[in-house]
Image (cartoon, rainbow, N blue to C red; front, side, top):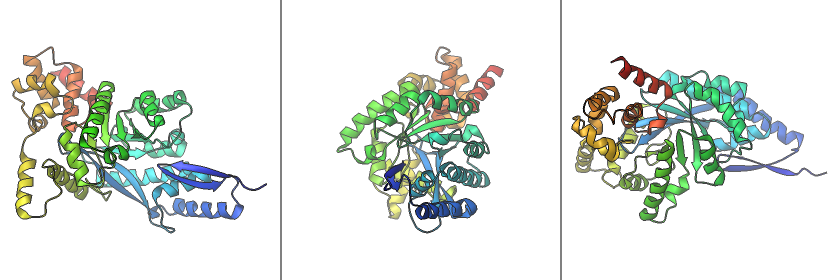
Length: 382
C-alpha cells in the first residue's frame, strides 16, 4: 500500500510528509533534529521588541529562534519537522531554554515581559513545563497560535490554571486569521490579543483600518485584554497605526528586527515611534533628526494613556498629573493617593491597577497578578 501524505502545519507553514514516511526519509529528519538537540548552540535566540504606541516605550519582547545549520530554512520548518517525527516537544523545550537563558544573562529590563511561543498540545509536557519553570512567571507571556488546533478547550483551560496561579499570562496569536483564533480569544480569555499581520498590512484604506481597530479595541477593552498589532513591517504601517490614536502595542520589522538583547533593539524601537508620530519614514538629514527629537520630547496628554481616557483623565489633572510622563514619575501608588484625596469614588483597586497599566502601556488586566497584589498591599499599608 503506498504511503499516504499527511500535513503538519505550524505558525503559517504547511509541510507535507508521508504519514508512514520511508524509513530513510524519517531517519534523515530525525538526524537533523537530533543534531539540533545535541548541539544547542545551533539554535540562536533573538528578541523582537513590543512597543507601546501610547507611550513610545518598549514593554516586552518576543523571544524567537534562528537555526544555524543546513539546510537553511525558516524556523517554522524545523519545528514542523520535529513535530512530524514525534520530537516537537523536545525541540520546543530546547528553544525555550535557550531563549530564557539568554534573557536571564542579558537581564530582562524592568517592567517588561518576555513572550514565548508554546504549542497548546505541549503545555503539559514535562520538558516544556520544566523549561518555563526556569524563569520568573510574572514576567512571562505564553502565546498560542492560530495554526495549532484545539479540540478540547475545557482541558486546555485546566492545563493553564497552574501557570495562571503562578502569574504567567497568555496571548492568542494571529487573531483574525480565522474563526479558530477568535474562538481562542473567547474561550481562553487571554491577557493579550495579537492581530494577524494581514489585518495591519491588508486594509485597503486608513478609514477601513480605523473602523476595524475601533471595533476590536472596544472588544478587547471590555474583556481587559491588551491588543497587539503584529507585522508592522514598514514605517508607513507604524505611522498609520499611530495616527489612529488607539493605545495598541505593536511589533514588526518597521519597529525593529529581531536581534540580540537589549540596547540596540530598544533604541531602534523608540526612534521608529518618534518618527511615526510625525507620520513620515525615518529621517536621514540632521535637521529632520532635530525635529524628531523635539517630537519625542513633547509630553503625552494624560487622557491619551492606556486605561485613562475621559473618565480618569480629568481627575488626574485635578490631582496635578497632566501627562503620561508625569504619571510615570509619580508612580501608580502616589498617583492613586492623590486621586483618592480629591476623588475618592474614582480611587478603586481597579483604578490603581489601571494606573500601573497606563505606566506600562498595557490594559489593566495585563498587569501581572503579583504586581497587582503588591500595589494593593502598598496602598493598604498607608
